[in-house]
Image (cartoon, rainbow, N blue to C red):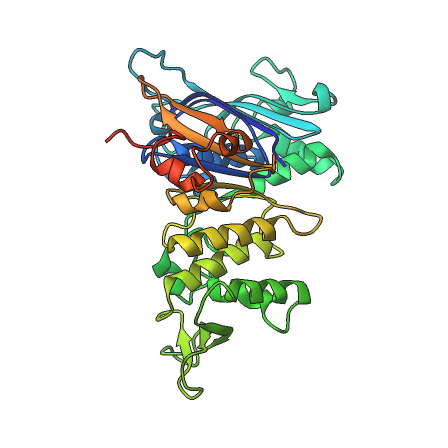
Length: 386
């Protein structure tokens, strides 16, 4: 898992350093830069894959744009041509500087410097413009990714590269989750392909995943079970996600994803990302719980944190949210669950301040003052100035 992340001169992130936990929740006004933080990690993930171009960024959920759009461009700030990013785990570190000539839009970014090292800088794989090795002079290709094949799978440097490479940013769209088309594995970034993604959780799957599905369905009042079938679609077409309505007559109790409530779809989406065998080790959801009733948002957050903590391969998650109820589900005493208030300075630079949950709990005006209430009243910051 990522323990530290830093970025310089990416969009509104002029200089940002974060000490991370297993769960990282970012709150703030619209336009404060929360999504930019996720995209900066996505940019580093593309670099870890070996190529930083339009396609590799889009696959990770980074919004498209030219090189000038990705570089910080503030008034009274030197316009540097480089973006620097680094990530650190317990036993390794990956640090890069990316450069792109403004006159050549659409071409891949160039690696100016690159260092992949073990703990305390041991066994570094590195290069710079001064490198004499011919193998290091193709600056359109990641040198660390090239050397990845020579590393053992258990090598912490390899594990860090793999985690960054697999990182994705999901932002579920209700209309997309209703569709039957198949998305990328385990599910497309907009949530399409939900029907196929739920398949491993059904009764013919593992007991562990089926039990989690039962927990997910228990968050809805009307769903008894789910299966793959055909509602209004053609029997020859791809199967749809079908819900069994516990309140309807058994002859008419099948509801397709086209008619199901968006709450049920979002619950299953979160289940898939948390526990699907092919979900990445490190993942992000932008606008978490955006379409949910506040009470369901809080309960789903509790379950989602439980699901991502299960098993030996616990998942590290990054969430942005505008839903105050999400905060009420955060365990105040767990140091691995971290809340960050994201704001813009007077110059427009994005800053992220960690909120000490235990300290905030101690300073509540009264016992009935929840985190959501404190956020809504401005006591945590991270609110729009309107």
